[in-house]
Amino acid sequence: MSSALDKRLLKWSGVAALVGAGMWTYKSVAILATGDQPDHWFELALVFSGVSILLLVYAVRDQLDRSSRLITTLGWVAAVAGGVAAVAYIIEGDDGVFGPAALATIVSTVTTLFLIGGQIRRDQLLPKYSFAPKLLAWLFVVSIPFGAVLSGIDERLLEVALLGTVAGWVILALGMLSRPADS
Image (cartoon, rainbow, N blue to C red; front, side):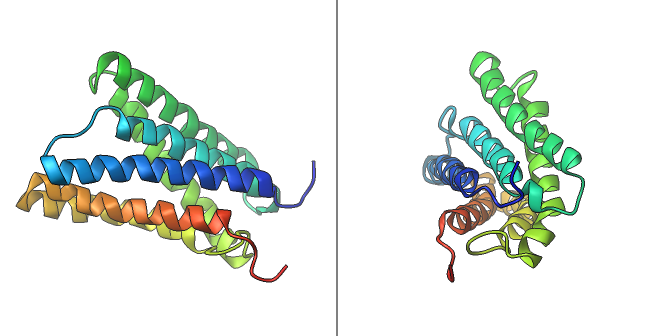
C-alpha cells in the first residue's frame, strides 16, 4: 500500500459529498417553501455523506498520525449506518431503526471530521480548502443550537441552520475535487 494520498478516492469522496449536499439542499428548500419534507431525500443524503466520509478516510489514512483503526472504524460506521438509516426509513418510516442509525451516521461523521480535520489542515492534505473537514464538523455542532432557536420562531427555520451544514459539505467537496494550486 502506498503512503501517498489516494487522489482517486479523494475525488469520489468529493462526488459523494456533492450528491449528498444536493439531496439535503433539495429537502431543506422544499421544507422552507412548502412546510412538507419530500420523502427519501434526507435519508438517501445520509448514505452519500457516510460514503463520502469513508472514502475520505481511506484517501488520507496513510498520511495520518492518529490511529487509523479508530478512524477507519468510524468511517465504516458512518457509511454503514447511513445505508441502514436509508433502508430502514424506506421500509418502516422514521420509527424503529431509522433514528438510531441516522444518529450513528451523524455522530461518527462529526467525530471523524474532528479527529482528522486538524491534521488535514496542518499538512494541507486536500488540493484546496484543507480547513473544510474541521469547518464542517463545527457547522454540524453549531447548527444544533442555532436550529433549535430558529425552530422556536418557526419550525421550518430549522432548515436554515441545516443549510449551513450543507454549505460545509459543498466546501469540503470542492476542496477534494479541486486540482492542487501548485503541482
